Length: 291
Length: 233
Image 1 (cartoon, rainbow over the protein chains, first blue to last red):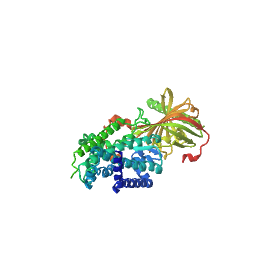
Image 2 (cartoon, rainbow over the protein chains, first blue to last red; image 1 turned 30 degrees about the vertical axis):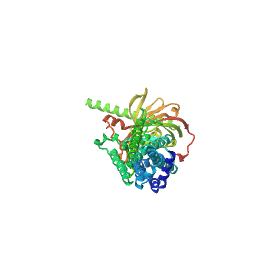
Image 3 (tube, each protein chain N blue to C red; image 1 turned 90 degrees about the vertical axis):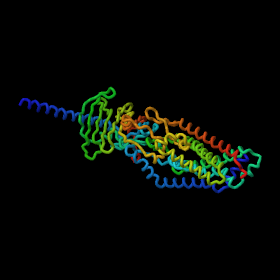
Image 4 (cartoon, rainbow over the protein chains, first blue to last red; image 1 turned 90 degrees about the horizontal axis):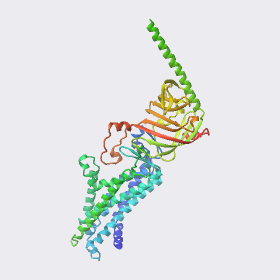
């Protein structure tokens, strides 16, 4: 099994397409960091225009933690599309090249073959997230420094102490890993049905875009179906950055406002991963690979 | 004719009484000022608690600096601080530090079991941002227990003070600023939050939410040891 995973990883990282995602993340993050470094104050002033009429805010607001939060907000919506490039190609790519049959002549079960493929695409997904974390968090911390994190939500603001932030990012990235693995699992499932790569990649992207739009639309008729869309749960990494308050409105350091929401979302996403991968294996077991 | 004489007499008494009390109040405020004048400068450590409905913030450690005549600076020890606009820099020294006001007696009341005199200070300087200050003065100890200040730019805010070890200098152990806040709302498109709409607030909640409080509990006052002007820049 280990050898199988190694082979799959070799195949993934031998393709130039794999590095498109890493290059895209690097370019996007660098551009955002450059923009915020050059003209971040204007951006911060614009964000705080409403608040600053009654509250004076002092301190290094545009620090590495906030920059990372801004980037995660923007990128975690789009990274799934980059993951689809690889995950949705895992089986269909082999089918397209006609190598499926040769591979399955080896003494391995189809389940083992599929699991190795999924684990390899998961490794790619996790590496992309680690790359994102290095650039968005650590490089931003280096460029912009660290300080308290001042977050503006739609109906309230949250101030997190410097020492109370890093573990939240660790939690958020772990959550994002589960969310991205869900996307990888979806792409992996769709790749079983096609004989070429384009179809499942576009299909995965379409599902993500369609569900994300439904999740973000604030139209009451769609609110009933939102809890059943995995894209709704993918956004809950933000819950790590909301804090509980006492009766006297004093923030409790080290707390999370709705931990049960995070647990629920992780369970839903894990269920999706298991469901998608199981379905992919079941379909592949019956798949005609002789064509 | 007799009635007119009576009315004139009563009016004269009222005017005289007001004038006498006015003089008393000027004297009382001058005594409070003289007590505060004992302090040329101070720095103090404090814990600041921000209680505004739309702000979730933990307790913060602050350092407060004052230097005559009215230099005041509140610094948070690292981190980001959220302070009510304009109001936090107002302290008793800055209110009674000048002579540009008229003090008017406005009655007596009891605050925290202490009998206090209510004195209204009307600034004589037209350019002053302060429109009116109402002070509740503990005459026996020459301490300002509470003040309500209305400004042109930053609305009205109350300052409540509790005294302890440094009462001799007129320096409070605890100060509570109460101020009005405006509604806070950002479009979800900007914050990129797409959760379900939250429940609408009741009118009572909205009213409560418009009052904000900042509470500073002071410790370790260092009085008259000299402070460099660069601290206030």
